[in-house]
Image (tube, rainbow, N blue to C red; front, side, top):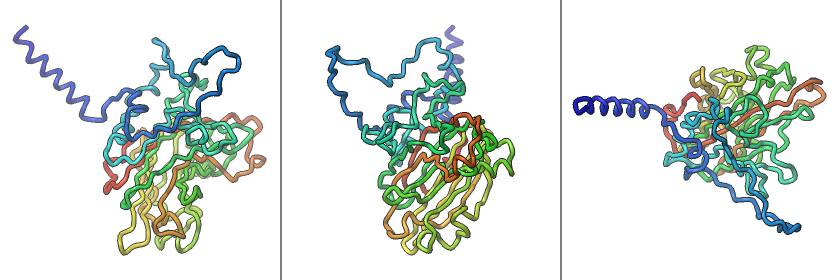
Length: 356
């Protein structure tokens, strides 16, 4: 036994090295709750006194996981799926992080969350243990019902005042197979938005469903963008088109029911320049990062040289009329989103461009 102890110790050390050489495997609760950079919205206001006199009610929105629940053993709930998020949200240059796996982040504004409209209930939710969809994911659930082409209550995540040299934003998304163009007939969608100033649309990341149907059959959409508004103070000389942002360096097609990761990088102008440089990449589990836009010259606001992007939207909105696009038997369109991280002052983002 004494002679085998060094061998056992060597094996243990080797295993520790192997499992720590790549991303750490971190328990899900750490990813969603124990990070200093994770946005913690204000709690909802206290409930009104119980007029029936029956005392306090049981708390809601608690995630109770029973031992042996098959859903907790699914790959989509694996803790390592959030390791990249934990890694970025633990960095000292993390500006803000939104796991979207905290139900309070998705509450309406008057209840302390980031759903934009107080007049409507949240349209994005997090409750994976009670998600009836068999494809359930450990992420915020987005549903577009057949009665509309648009998300009924967008989520707008604040971007805190950031260091003047750069802003890097990463987020993960997933789309069900029903998002294929032939199911819904929605040609294009303003899916994500970097708003500035005063909650105005400005730098848009789009899903082009009809384009994918024609050019990449079997894929959900091709990603491109748009820059608002047009004009000499919003778009720079290296942009040839603002409405369909160009030039586009690469083409990325979003696969159905596959996690996709997007990366947006805004580099501030130097002392003698007036234009920010905007780059965009996308990747999925099978495809390494594809550069879509490379250092396009834009500004956060055509009226202010000191303005910055103020918020990041889960918009999921289209101008396509429901009567023109809707299929009579269209199912609800199910998507998921998770793990939004905003970093400041990153000089080289190349090491951060990793597949989900």
